[in-house]
Amino acid sequence: MKKLSGVLVSVVAVLAVLALVLVLLRPAIFERGERTMDSATIGGQFNDIAELATEEYVYSSVGKFDDEGLRLLGVRVPFTGKNFLVSYEGKVTAGIKDASQITVDVDDADQTVTVRLPRAEVLDSTWTQGSSEVWDQTLNPINQIKVEDVTEFVDSRRELEKQKAIDGGLLDRARARAEELARSHMEALIEGTNLEGYEVKVITAR
Image (cartoon, rainbow, N blue to C red):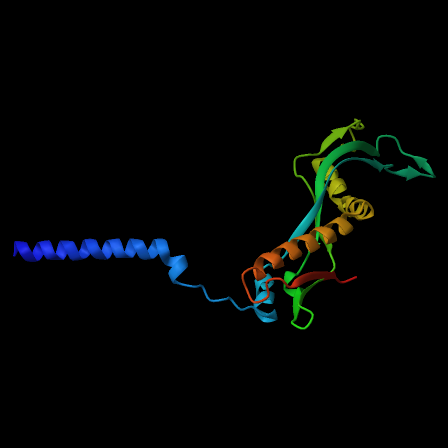
């Protein structure tokens, strides 16, 4: 019985050594088959992305609220108006709203992979809750300034800040960043496949 146990131990030891040798020499013994990719396979890599935010515009602004109040025969009625200055912060994000619209075309004749992106657009315009601070407010005992006045005023300026971001080139930067990300992602995807070495082109809809 002891002899049988010794033989089993020896066999296990030999198998363990062989397994270790195979692991170490695997690159030389086994060859990895080339991975094959096509347009459908590559396109599926983008379909899992719902929204691709690529650029943001962070701002800190000051706005003026002015409510003249009541008028009687063209004359302002005292203590019925209110005004204030308020500072606030927020951000506008831009990118590709629906990444499932990204398409990929493979041209084996020209050895190119063309990625077509939808145009970049504003994804969101928000202001940071709690960032607003009121300055130079009227102290009116009849028509006092309320928290709701400040909140509604700042919220109403989101569209203004959005337009300022667009005028400042936000969409152009978002488009350039999306193209950069798409190109690097595609180059990484085709590496080690039948498409390795193909030229990657990225085209954005206008």
